[in-house]
Image (cartoon, rainbow, N blue to C red; front, side):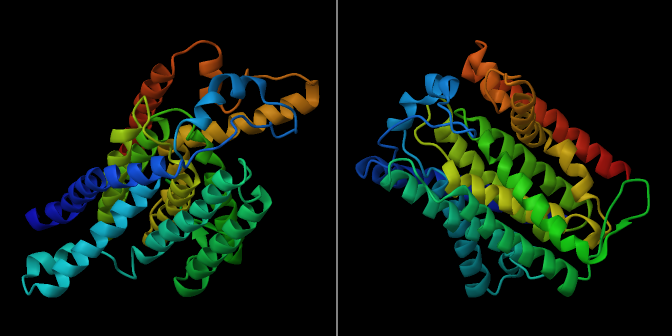
Length: 352
């Protein structure tokens, strides 16, 4: 039991320490090469000038570096390399048991993390180099759909997953539709990446969500996956250390795309593959991600129906800023809600 606890917690501690150590170097390059938008502001989805957003955030976009997500996946990569070296060079069973990157549980989430990081990095690079115009959203969605379609095919063809776990009921059999479902799930989670809009907000929320899914995996005896989730949590907390207001940098796409794609993989891994309910738990554990996407959709539909806005600005966390809440109050209250939701998800997991 002691070895298992160390296997779960030591990678998290290592990734946090690695993140703290590499951040000064990353920060140096981000500021040296002025990795921020040269012109602030943006247009809304409908093509009109985003008045409220530009009032709240426009100026900051030309002062705060982007690509802070490098800290997250960079910490994960370095920690995995260190653990691999320790497990390879040592004959001690303690060190060989520490390495948890396995085909059965963690290859898919790890691949999603690094592929998402690479795609996000490409978008951020173009965003900085071409006046705030990154890779077109349609292209990003196509690339994400290809990746998630492959993931869905792997679950269906290689792992034999054809159903979704429903708490207290029999699994919902959907057969080959598990492939388009994986695409829908991943794109929906990617859309929730816009929660990266206030200093400290996304880092805190994602750290709580991944730690909760680490708990879910642990309760389902997926110990390698649990260790991976906690490793990622440690890396996110290292990022958060420097992202707390005033943020030294922003996560942007290389972080948010990596995390949302990885979360989709973790959710799928903790579902019917192990007779679990990872998908059904997502609206609970990831409640704030659902709210973020829903507020955008509601805003668009309401505006089309009435010609007016329901919220001062969408997504919802910016609405709270627009009506006068200090950004730190929004962030702290989101953290609190996220912790409550994560706890509720873990309680439900234990009950079922």
